[in-house]
Every structure is written in C-alpha cells, then in structure tokens.
Image (cartoon, rainbow, N blue to C red; front, side, top):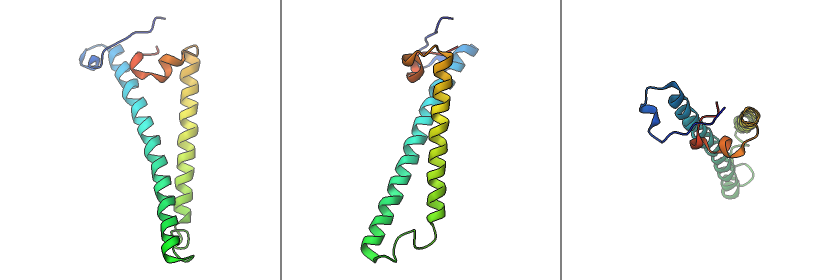
Amino acid sequence: AAIEHADFLAAIEDKAEYQRIMAYFWAYFAGYAGMFVAGLTILFTLRENHLMRTTMGPEGGQYFHGIKYHIGLGYLTFAILTVHSFVILGVEMYWSDYDVYHVLNPSAGWLG
C-alpha cells in the first residue's frame, strides 16, 4: 500500500484518509508533549525536595511530610506512560514494515 502525503491543512478536506492523517499528526505531538511534561514534573519535584532539605535540614522536604507516596505514584505513572509509548511505537513500526522515517515523522503521512 502506498503511503499518502497531505499538507498541514488537510483536515479541512472531507476525506476520511486526511482526517486520519491529522489524527496521527496531533496524537503523536500530544504524546510527546505529555512525556516531556511528566519528565519535567519529576525533575522539579526532586529539585524542590532537595532545596527544602538544604534550607530546612533533614526534617524538611516532601519525603518527611508523607508525600513520598504521591511522588512514587508520579514515578509509576511516568513509567507506565513510557512503556505504553514504546509499545505503541513498536506496533507502528511493525505495521509500517519498520519504516522509521514514516513512524517517527507524523507529518510524513498516514501509515495505512
């Protein structure tokens, strides 16, 4: 099956193929943004905890106040999102006959 290409505003066309292309396009970028934000959240939480322990001593920080379970759930969520992303990437690679360019570049077209 040939891989179709469409321009950025192809969603205004009344064709299901173009709408699927745009759905892939936006889904990939939303997924990448979610992973980026999840990673930054963990980094900022660790930084805040380190600064609080530095300024307040060993009794400071979020771990002392019982929020360690909340941070643990954050790590778990990040791990689940990462595994899910790799699974979806593997499925896309399988169905595209391992065409890396079209899998990792959502604007290149719909995979079929």
